[in-house]
Amino acid sequence: MSEATVIKPDLQFVNEIIKGGGESLKKCYQCATCSVVCNVTPEGNPFPRKEMVLAQWGQKDKLITSADVWLCHQCSDCTAYCPRGAKPGEVLNAIRKQSIKHVAMVPFFARIATEAKLLPVLFAIPMVLFYVILVVLGNAGFTAPRAEGNIMAYHKFVPVPVIDTVFILTAIFAATSAFVGIKRLWNGMKAQAGEMQSSGSLVGDIISSVTTILAHSKFADCNVNRTRQWGHMLLFYSFAGLAVVTTWAIVYLYGFELLGIQPFGPFHFGESPYPNSDPVKILALASSIAFAAGIVILLLNRLSKAGKAGMGSYFDWIFLTIVTGVGATGMLSWALRLADMQAGYFVYYLHLVFIWSLFAYAPYSKFAHLFYRTTAMVFAKNSGRDKK
Ligand code: SF4
Ligand code: SF4
Image (cartoon, rainbow, N blue to C red):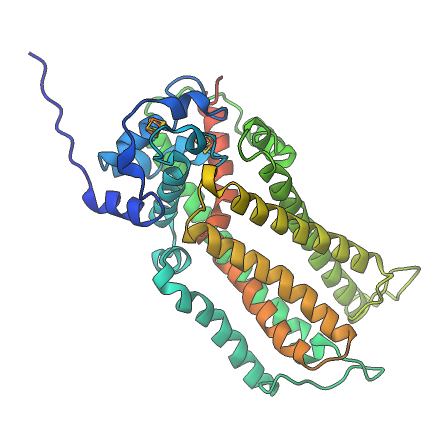
């Protein structure tokens, strides 16, 4: 006679999923419609039906480092077609939140970035940090000396070397956190897969996955949330554009100060602010417009599809709030500087707070999907899991 299998549910895990946006979990009656309509899942052993039953049974170990949970692109086709309103897309999102907490290098940061009750702490950390810097600089009254030509300039409010120091340290923290999280997730996925047959070309799998991400081709498989592809793509490439702008500004400043490169043609080596005709300003403006358009599309898409796809959880909204805050304060501080209005200094302070929040919490917030979904996609290719 075969032995009975005893399943030990982790009830705290079930409760955390329910509280974290998966409140409809228990409605699932395992009809499998969701796995049928999902165009992203591989065919063998498809998701998300099996994740729904594993979550109901509190099988934390099987879900917390599951590649399939991260392969989901949250397109919500399954949620739209679920006959029970169990919202499997939202449940998988709630499981991903638990996965982030599980692999986090600094668990308290993961709590700050994912729990609504810790929202004041989330913003208090960068607000205090930058206010202390302003006190040390003697600019705590949100004023600053004028720059050459009697113009308002934010580098007189917070000098560039101070900004560079704070954000280089923040970037090191975020990169280390992401590396630790990726390693823990990869090891967990490997342990679950057991004896896996490697494709033998990790580099090739990374290139192939990055190509898929750059083209956003997986989003094209979605039906209900098809417009999300364009919002996500605009946001993705605007971040890339703004990263180039930041690097470009560093080259301008230190190329002038350390290498003595003088302005030539349209390129203004030296201290900011640069004229609006400079290519770096044109790229910054184009990226900002793409950024704003991406945010608007994502917000409108989320609101207009709420009935079918769900409204999302705090986890989604706090990320969208921070991203929107970065864009809104960035554009407003730029406009206030052009209008020579002192309020620009306070808005610029808020801008620094939002940017720090975006980067420092990146491996702990919804932003982490950039690292962990990429990891899962590479793993799926490398282990043969992604076969259709
Ligand atoms: S989540 Fe909905 S569609 Fe999927 S198995 Fe459960 S009841 Fe069926
Ligand atoms: S949200 Fe989309 S990708 Fe994720 S399981 Fe549902 S249908 Fe598949």
